[in-house]
Length: 326
Image (cartoon, rainbow, N blue to C red; front, top):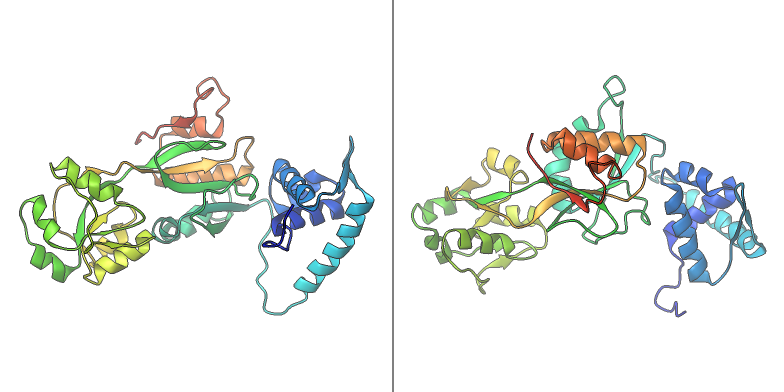
């Protein structure tokens, strides 16, 4: 195997290995790292494949290191101790109340952050206090391998290897800065084409909006594209063009007056927002966070129940759970 472009082994896998070697079991390592037993097992298998070495003997009760594993444990322990011996470092919180969630920057900044205090709660509230660790990422991660409890993504439907629940849909409409809105005025949808249009990673939303009102739209040289919806809203507020409101992500910007509605017509965005989790049993804290997230999105208790227990008669064989407002 050629490691010339990646001289270091996977660091998450090294962390799982060190915890398993130190505690003597994959289960204890999972508790230490606040992930599942399966996530630890997969990370160590990945490390063994990368190294081309057998690191553990799997036994009925726990695991025992091979000689290669003992040598690697000595080196990783020294390396981790050296890394830890620094000042002004941030230490990731651990414990059963910590929940790891990954999502897009726009969802984290525009939807999760305003609700973070509510989602984490307090000790005196039902479900107790949680500690939410956000991972901001555009990549379609393997949730189990990355130790993620939950994910919120924008997409067309269920993803393989995940249990999925639709959180909410988007009925989009055009927005502009107050000054540009005055120039756009009122009238037919076609008038918007006289101005630059702003979209994010693709123009799906704009195509759907114009198609719903009898027009064909293709991106033009004067239109602007930004990778993340946060930047789309910023560009819109700066008067660089017309953007689509994507409720509820744009709600705070509209309420604050940075952008205003320039057309009353709406259209359903073909993509929706989904809450995903790895297959298998969920930790109690992750289950509680899923309850709080779905309550904010008005998901029915029945749909949530199937998401939490897909092997029940109601959920058996269902690849994903459609969303229905309560």
